[in-house]
Every structure is written in structure tokens, then in C-alpha cells.
Length: 257
Image (cartoon, rainbow, N blue to C red; front, side):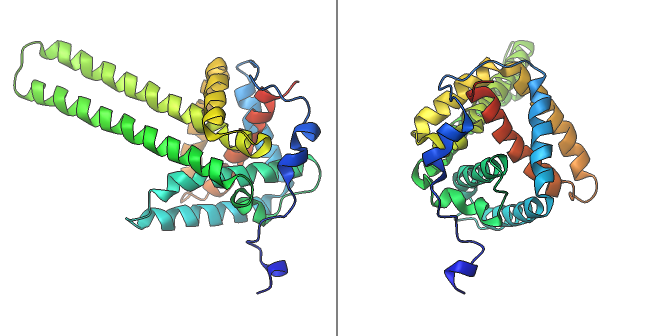
């Protein structure tokens, strides 16, 4: 197969060279938006999906298949978390192409492998290491508390309260990690910043916009339940809408209105 006909070949144009000027005025520190924008991000994601539904569904099928295949291989399944930011970066490029009128192509899924792959991989690595630390701390804390309760140590009610508090702390820590990598891929791929700066910027802006983030999360959870009912087929639509909505959130919070 020639390189010209290879659908997996990433596009050759250096999108991030002109993205900052064509997108508008970039705000490095981001901006605060109303809570209702959480709904608007999903709505914009749906609009982006409707621009090329067939291509989006093809991207979703290949993306899910790749993640499932990699996840089933014990030795390399850790690569799932490492590769997701690269794929999100490529999808962000596709969303930008739609926005500027050039349209989405299937090979946008792999565009992150030719644009800032190192920093995008670093985003996945930092997320994976941080998640492992949170999970280890959680398992360790739950194990100790449960052992003390099982052995009848005095203050069982207080320990149960401590267990609940630990769950809350773990949930907050997990949410912080999600927010930290939420907008990092488009920041890396369009603005050529390091993984650490991208994660720091993503976390800072997401915390400032915690209300729209919560609205968005609740809506996604409801949509996920509905998408799972017809044999998970709804995820062929929901997954592209979610990733397109992340791009919409990035555009909303990091650019002048």
C-alpha cells in the first residue's frame, strides 16, 4: 500500500503553527465561565459530531477496538493510559479542522503521533503514575481501617467515619487527576507547551470552573447510562461527542469570548 492511499498516515500540515492566530486570542490563565456552559460544551460536541457522523463513528470504532486490544494484553495494557492523550490530541486537531471549514478525516485520530507525541505521552505517563499513587494510598488506607474494625479495635464508629472520609478524599484526588489531564492534550498540541505546564494549566482552569465541570460530568453520566442500554451501541455516538465537547470546553475557557 502506498503512503498516499494509507488511511492511517497522519496529515502532514503543522496545525499548531497557525492554530493560535486562527483560533482567536489565547488566554494562558484561562477564564471563568457560567455553570450552564457545561451543557453548552456537550451541545457543541454534538454539533461537531453532526458535521461528519460517519467519520466520527469510524474513529470511535477503531479507537475503542485499539483500547480493548491493548487492554487485553497483560504486559502492555498500561499503554492505554499513555496513549489516550495522544489520540485526544489528534482528535482535537480534527475538531479544529472542522471549525476552520476543512472537515474531519479518519487519519486525524493518529495526528498526535506526528505532532508533539513526546509531551502527549508524558501527559499520559504523569497521569498513570499519579493514578497509581492515589490507588495505592487508597488500598493501603482502606486495608488498615478494615483490619482495625475487624479486630474489634475501640472506636469502631469513629473508624467507620474515617473510612467514609477516606472515600471522599480519594474521590476528590481522582477528580483532581481527571481535571489535570482534561484539557492538557489540546494545550500541548496547539501551544507546544510541556506536559507539566499543560496539566497544571488544565487543573487550574478546571478548578476555577468547577460548577460547569460538575454540570458537564452529571450530564455525561446520564448519557453514559443511556448509551449503554442498547448493547453499548450508543457509545459509538457518545464517545465522539465527549471528545469533541472537551475541545469545545478548551475553546470556551482558554480563548476570549
